[in-house]
Figure (cartoon, rainbow, N blue to C red):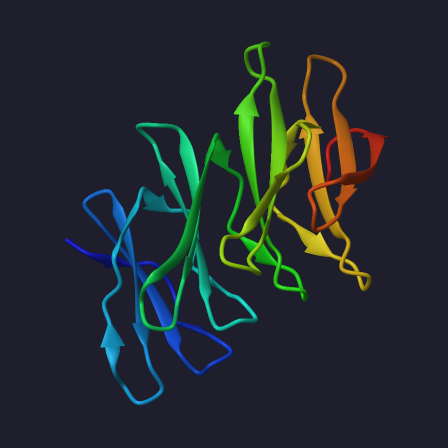
Length: 193
């Protein structure tokens, strides 16, 4: 059976987007302002969250394929077509975030060589041009905090991660730009609250 994931997301062009899942796949339906429905196409994997509206009228949907351990980020046009899909090995940390300049950010987590220890990567997708520019950060220590990516007034992105090795819990606040460059990482003692 098909299951809807949450509320309708409204895009900047007036189109509405609704994600559903069925049979291990995700569908993002588009509803035009005049009521025309575009049922969308199947996206690989289960949805990680509801879609997020991009400033260009697209909806950004993140999915995760459990069989291949792959996180996918897809942009859906107002006509229901897939504008782009980018895939990354690792478990999604949360839904996508979109900066004011249209850059799409998605985090994903990989286990390190030490069992039970993780590192987080941020993907920055700049959608301008015929094909999107994709940038991946260097590994950020720890697993991403549930709050996800946040933006400062200067459009710098912030992410909180934490590590939990026995007896030495650390929190990291990392900033990065639209090109995936880590600008600064601050280490703090203890778990984030």
